[in-house]
Length: 69
Image (cartoon, rainbow, N blue to C red; front, top):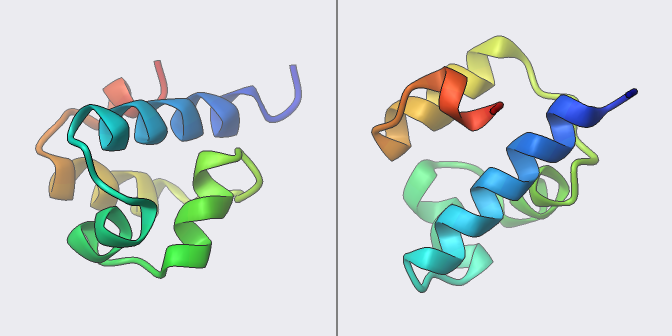
């Protein structure tokens, strides 16, 4: 399905953020990206690079593959 990995990444980020009790803005600041970009990621609208996936995984302390599964 087209865009499925983007949506999986978005679901993972939203679930992670809400489990930590963080607002979208504070979560974006924590991982070093802009709030509006974070919103696009969570909605599965952003076409991220592998470098971005690695950055997110590093900041969250998870394996990059976990972000997409």
